[in-house]
Amino acid sequence: MKIAQAVTIFLASVGSALADGEVVTIHGSGTTNPSKCIWHIMSLFEERSQITTRLTYRAVGSSTGQKEFLGATNTGYEIVETPGDALVEIGSHVPHNDFGAGDIPISEAAYLELNEKVELQSGKNTYVNKLHMVHLPFAMSSVSFFHNIPGIERGEDGIKLDACDLARIYNGKVSYWNDEEIVNKQTDKIKTILFDIEEKIFVSRRVEGSSSTKSITQFLHAKCPVEWPADMVDSKLGDKWHASTNPCQGSSGMTKCVRQNAGAIGYLDSGHGWSEELAEVSLKNEDGKYLTSADAYSKGGITYAASSGVTPDRADLDWSSVEFLNKPGADTWPIVVMSYVYVRKDVNRFMDSKEERGLLKLFLEALYDDEEKEYFKPCEKLGFAPPPKDVKRVAIEGIESISWDLSDNDNDENMWSHEIDTIPITGMGKYVISAKRRSLSGVSIEDIAGAEAKLKGEVEYLTATVQSLMKGTNGEFAYLFNEMESENKKNDAALVLGALSFTMWSCVCVGFIVKRYVFRK
Image (tube, rainbow, N blue to C red; front, side, top):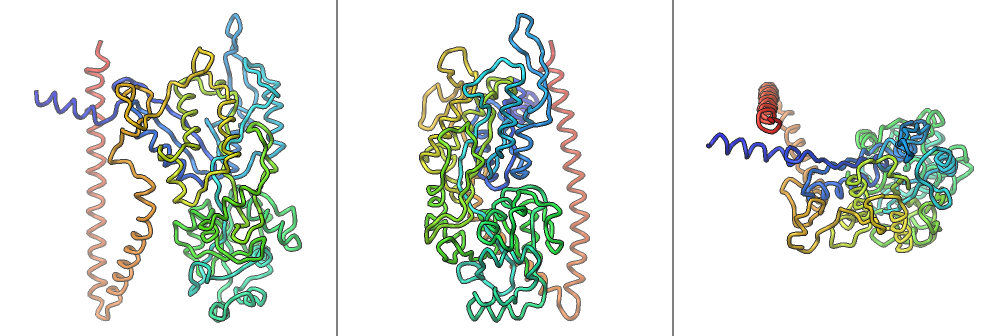
C-alpha cells in the first residue's frame, strides 16, 4: 500500500502530461530587447494553465526573428480542401516560428515579397486587399550608449556626448577620451579624469543584425551625416564597421565588452543597461539638452516620442517607414524604438491545432491587457512603456483580423479564456488561464527587479574580501583558499555524479511504471 502511494505521488510530480497526453505549445523568436517581458508573460501562462502548456521565446535579435518569421526560402505542404483533399507544396515563405518579434518593422521589400508570393501559392485562404501579415506594436523603449570610464559616475553628472562625438568614435577618427571636442563639453571634474586616461577607447559593436544597431546608425546619420553617411545605416554592418571596433555577440556580449574593458563604450537597449548597472552616456537630444535615457523615461520622454510619431491605421499595412528618432521635447529621448510581434494572417495554414492557435491568440491579447491581469504592467519596471492608445487599438484590431479558425460558429469563439476574479466551476476548465492558480516555483519580475543590484553588491564585497585575504604577507590565506578550492572541486564532481545517477534511476522508474500500468492493455 505504501509503495502504491509513493508511486502515485511520484507520477503526480512529473506533471499532468502523463495523465492526458496533451501539451499545447507556441514558439516565437526575435529581439532581445523585450525578451524578459515576453518570458514573464509566458511563465504566467504556463503557471496558470490547468493542462500542460509550453511557451518559448528565443532572444536572437530582430533580424533573425524577422528572417525566421518570413521563412523566405522555407518550403512545406498543406492540405487543400478539394474532393480529394490534395496535398499541395508551399514553395516559399513558410514561417519557422509561430510568431516573430523585433524592434524594427519588416522592410518594404520583404513585406511586398511576402504578400506577392503568398498570393501566388495555391491555398484555401483568400484575404481582403491581399495582405497576409500584421505588425502588432506592443511596447515602447529606448536604446542608449553606455561606458566604462573609471572615475565617472552614472547619471546626469556623467560624460556628455552628441551624435558627432559618437560618430567619430565609431568611425575611428577619435581613439582617446581626451579628444578636445569631447573634453570641452565636460565639467572640470570629468575633464581631469579624461586627461588622465592613457588607454585607447574600447569601441564595442554588435555582430549579428540587431534593432539597436539599426537605431543608433539611423540616429548618427540623421544628426551627423558628414561623419556617418547613409550607407552606414543598417541592422548589420559586417565589414563596414571600422577596423578599430570590437565585435560583441548579442546584448549579453555587449554588456561583457563594456564591463570588462576600462575605457569602453557600447550601445544597448536601455532597460538591459540599467539592470546591469552600467554607466550611461548623457546624450544631446533634439532640443539641445543632455540627458540619460533613465532620466527621460522617468519624465515620460519615451512615451512622448511615441505620441509624436506617425503610424498606419491598420496592422496589415506597410509599417517600414515608422520611426521615433529625434522627436522634439526637452525631456524626450532621441533614440526610441517600438517593439512589434509579427504574425501571419493565414496562421491556420501553419498551425494545425486549434488549441495552439487559440493559446497564441490569448497570448497576443495579453500584451495589451489591463493592470489586473498582471501581464504587461510589470514590464514597465524593466523600462518599457505601452504604445499610445490609438496604436494599441490598431494592434487589437489586427489580432481580430487574423484567420484563427477556432470554432465552427460565426463568432469564431476562442476555447481559451482568463479567470481573474473567481468563477466557480468554470474557472477549473481545461482551457482557462487562471490568476488563482499559482506556484512557488514561479519567479516574477517583482521578485528579481530589485534583487539583482543587491546580489551584485554582495558578490563584489565578498570578492574584495577574499582578494584582500589572498594578499596576506605570509601567504597562509592563499594556501588555505587553494586547498579549499581543490576540495570544492572534488565535492562538486561527486555532487554532479550523484545527480546524474538519481536522474537516470528516476527515468528508469518512470519508464517502468508507464509501461507497466499506463500503456498496459
